[in-house]
Structures are given as C-alpha cells and as structure tokens.
Length: 289
Length: 339
Ligand SMILES: [Zn+2]
Image (cartoon, rainbow over all chains, first blue to last red; front, top):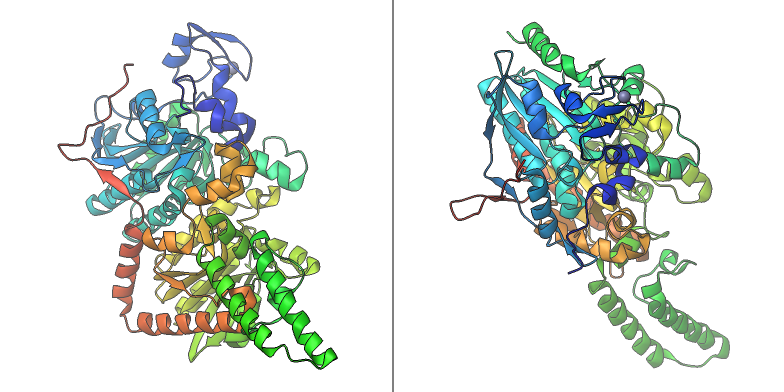
C-alpha cells in the first residue's frame, strides 16, 4: 500500500475542487498565533476562536468544523445527534494509486472525530426546536456520498413528520467520486425529500458556508425557502479552475463569492457568523405558525 | 456484412476497433474484386463475414469500462436527433425558458412515440462542427434546465408523459452559467421532476455526465443504453484528481463502476436497452427500434399506475439510492479524535 501516514487530505484534492480558495485554510498554521489571509494581521488564535473563527480586524470568516459550528449556532447542550448508526460503506471497493477508499474513510474519521461529512440531529436555536444538519468540510472535503445523502434525507423526513423547521449548514466540495454514481444519485434523493417537505409546508433555511460547490450546491443547498450565506463564502457549481480552463480567460473579481451570488439573485442574505443565530430565529418566528 | 450502414465504417475508429475495421476492409476488397475480375470469392467472403461477426461479438462482450466510455463518445454514435428522427412522429419543437433565452443544447417539444403523445426533453451534442457550436456540444446552461422544466410543467398540465433522453458531458462550466445559477436550475429541475403528476421516463443514450445529466434525469424509470455510461465525474476528471494525471482515465473509469451493467447492479438504473451487435453506431435503425420498444412498453406500464401511487413509487425509487452500512452492536464505532 502506498499509504503513508504523512499524507494529508487538504493539499491533495483541494486544487481541483475549488481553486485557490480551497487552500486558504492552510495559511493558518497551528499554534498560538496566526496570520489572517485577508488583512495579513497577526492574530492571537484564542481571540479568533472566541470571535467564532472570524478575524476581529477585518471580519474574514475562517472555516469551522461541524462540532464548533453547532456550538456557535445552537443553545448550549441542546444538540441531540441522530442517525449515528448510518455509516460509510465502500460499495464500489474503490481503489486508486495503491490507496483505498475504506482506508481514506478511516483516516478522515480519525482526523475529524466524526463518522462522516455531516452531523444531523435536533437542536434548539434561542429556544426554537429545529432539525439541524451541519456539514463537515474537514471530512473528505465535505463531499457528498451515500451516508451524507441518507442522513440529510432522514433529517428532512423527520422534519416533515414532526413539522420542524429545517436548517442545513452547507460546506462541501461536491459529490464524492469514490462512490461513483451512487453519490450523484444523492442529489436527486435529497431534492425529492425536500419537495415533499415543501409540499407539507415546512420551512427550510440553508446556510452556505465556505465552500459550497458541485453537487451539494446543485441540490439541497439551493432549494431552501430562505438561503443565507456567510461573507466571502465560495459558492458555485463548477470549480474555478475548470471554468478558467474552459473559457481560457481570467475569472471576474469576486466570482462565485457570496456577495456575487447576492448580486445575481441566488442568495437572500449575506449574514455574518455572529448574527446567524438571531437571523434564523427571526425567520422561524416570521414563517412558522 | 451483417447489417451495416455507413456510420460504422466512416473515418474515425477506436483503437480496439482496428482489427474489426481491417476485416471489414478485407471483405469489401474481395467483394469489389469479385465484381471487377469476375471471379468467385463467395466462400472466402462467407467465412470472413462469420469471422467478422464473431470478432465483433467478442470485442463488444469484453469492452473495458474505458472502452465503453469511448463507444459512448464515438463520433458516429447516434445522437438524440437521430433517435427523434426515427421514433418520434410529428415532432413539434418548443423553444425558450421565458427568462433568458433558448438553450440549443436541449431540444424539447411535443411528439408521438408509438401511439403515445409525449413531451420530449433531450440533450443534443451536435454532429458536425457547426452544429456542435450551436448546441454548445450538448452542455446546457441554466436556461436549458429552465426550458426543460417549463415544458415538463406543461406536460403535467396537459397530462402528457415526459420522456427525457440524456447525452451530455455535463452542464457548461462557464461564467454566464454560474451567474445565472446553473446549480439552482439543476436543483430546481430535480426537485420539481420528483413531484410531476405525470409519468416521467429517462434514458441515458450516450454520456450521462454528472449533474448536467441528472438535472433532467429524475423519473419513475431510468434506463440506459447498453454502451452508454453514467458517472459522477468524467474518468479524466476523476483521474486528474485522484491519480493527479488524466492519463489514468482508464483506471478511473473502471473504479467508478460507470457501465450499464455496473449501474444496474447498483440499482442506479432500472433497465438496460440493448444495442445492435458492435454498438449503436453500427446500426442506428436497430438501435432506434430497441429504444422505441423500451419507451413504448415502459410508458404503457407507467400509465396504468394511478397518479398518487406513481408519485409514491417514484419517491420510493429515489429514496433507495445509495449504499450505507448500518451500525449494529457488532459494528465498532470509529474512535473519536482527542480534541
Ligand atoms: Zn483579517
């Protein structure tokens, strides 16, 4: 096996999924101090974390893992995780260049402490009960395979049955190659579940975090009643490198950023992380009877 | 020569087809010698023809996944227009998404297949250079998906079944495409197709390229032609990410299990529409006949199902997609990392 313990996921798949933006996280070294890639100010790491992983100088939004996100968004200790029995399989026995998907999955599990690229459950936001899904961009790029599709679908079905508002925080490099067409089919599966939720009158708020791309964007991320996005988040369908190679031109300034989507009519609001909680609570109060 | 037309022989040949083409050429030479020299080669020709048939059969029964992808992209492979010309009577094309424009990568309109009046939505790549450019190589912009959805809603209103024919490398990765929300257009299309109150039948006839394909691919039944493929990403794209070079596309094609037979065993497709010996490009008429028979039969079956049941079954079909492990007491839970 060509697998060596040193190989890390981040620099590996990053460039193809979403261009330079994907590598942003690597600018943040582990340690006491970190440099903001936006304003280049040296920051005390603890201060950034206390500020919800947002640069106190310029407001640059760093990426947050699923666990930290749930802590930021929900009432303390209110998250009750569901569908933990749904675990990844290796349906294609996928192998490449001496590596195996099964091994990769184990490594991602050890790295993130999560079983897959999404956490699903019931939580409270300022006392309001919701069905919550939070994607974990650290887990194999937050890519969508069978487990992610299944857990999101189970969550939507639970929200439909119990008439709960549904909130999904999206953060994804797209559909997962290692499960082939099964990953692609999760786009339709989740969309079909959302269509029934919609018919039942459910409220769905999606939060698009950096990055939301590929098959995730082209399915449940874009099917909400209200679509919120974090400032500066990369949101799109095709990867920037793929587009640049196709059109053989420079991409426009700010292309596929949250503000660009707001300008072109594909998100409702760009909301700073610190305000997400109260924004979502307010939307629930307006739209849920 | 077993039923051939000009499509198979013309110009382009795939590497693994070379011995077949050589044999074909040999046969035609003997045939013309026979005429010119007035000599009788009929027994040699008969023998070579049977060799040709068995070589064709052997080659096509043992295609690798990558060879299958090449057949699906064969320049002479019938495109949706070829099928529409052969199996759709009185086709009335309808244009435009009522928002931005008319995407010519998707042909849509009214027509009759067998005795069924239907709404057809089909991805057309284009045959010659000029048409390819007009059709944008079958890579739709968001307006293609919006046109398609508009007409599917029309079909629902007027109780016509929807038939989609899928053949695309993918949705177009461009600036305008992103600006006008291709992701939203695809998502919206799948979302609405899953609830259309009319039968929906989808057939992948060539390339089923990722989101661009599934954007018109949510139906009661999904079929695939024998040498078509359906994949989450192109083999080249997958190879360039995982192997770091597109040269490993053959390995990527094998790893992703993208052939009709693999997809059937993964329950991604419901049925495989057989192709003529040596692929659809060797006998378009026969391929079209097979496709027509499948569509007619499937529509007849779907039309018998009451609409409420149809929608329940459709949901159940899509609900089953994917393969996961379910933890039991015996399944060890992954160790949580120390934080
Ligand atoms: Zn900063």
